[in-house]
Length: 279
Ligand SMILES: NC(=O)c1ccc[n+]([C@@H]2O[C@H](COP(=O)([O-])OP(=O)(O)OC[C@H]3O[C@@H](n4cnc5c(N)ncnc54)[C@H](OP(=O)(O)O)[C@@H]3O)[C@@H](O)[C@H]2O)c1
Image 1 (cartoon, protein in one colour):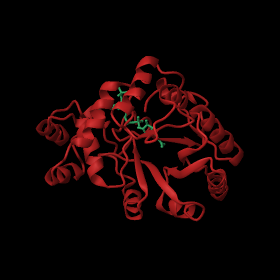
Image 2: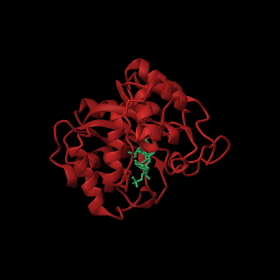
Image 3: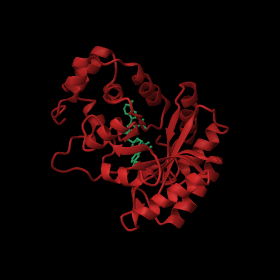
Image 4: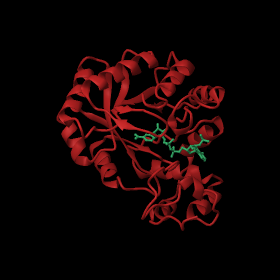
């Protein structure tokens, strides 16, 4: 979700729409909402509880810990176990939960031995504060090392139609039956990643009618954003897309993408790199 102010900091500029968007998730039978202590910080978790508590039994709220937020667009990794524990306890309190269904380590902190961070996750699972454990922005080797401490239920790495750097991790998750949660599924706001090999934002390409994605979208009577999501869902059975949005119209569009059955031929076309000329 995108429920905070600019730079994923502070309150939303349209709080009523953020709450209405969350409520609409339930009508549309959305069963996974991804958030984090650091979104706001705290804003996103608080809004989720305000809009949706008591939660339906079918809804999984996945949250994350391990990042400090000194200001807008600033993310500081902090994997010290005492900080992780304070973060988890705060998430439980804000979400009004006794146990978090999916708790993800937002980043492995390179300044803290990873065994300490994994041992923390193992201990809170044993304490019953966390049901399943996930990791974010990790390599196959890191997943395997974490697997010595707990079962890795999910991996949340950056992945979308035009950014497939983490393809080997997706393939590993697919083989091992680990949920793969692609962040930036619509490649929005790719701040700081511009450089050699950088593709223009996928959402910006949506305006260009000469791309293969736009031509395919037209044939399905869909938007290019929907085609990007439908392609993700066709890519792997372990794929769990979490498109971020702050409004009901995009939410409805994104959920409807799950009903688009892309043909094999279109999947092949979309899977070719590069997808399109830069807009
Ligand atoms: N693990 C990590 O390190 C990490 C990092 C970043 C994000 N995440 C997670 O991943 C989720 C998704 O990432 P994200 O929100 O940064 O990027 P995203 O899903 O790729 O893109 C969201 C952007 O696309 C727009 N959008 C959404 N639906 C659209 C549609 N149907 N048509 C056109 N534009 C559309 C949204 O604007 P509107 O608000 O106007 O809809 C928003 O600006 C986040 O909500 C967060 O939970 C995780």
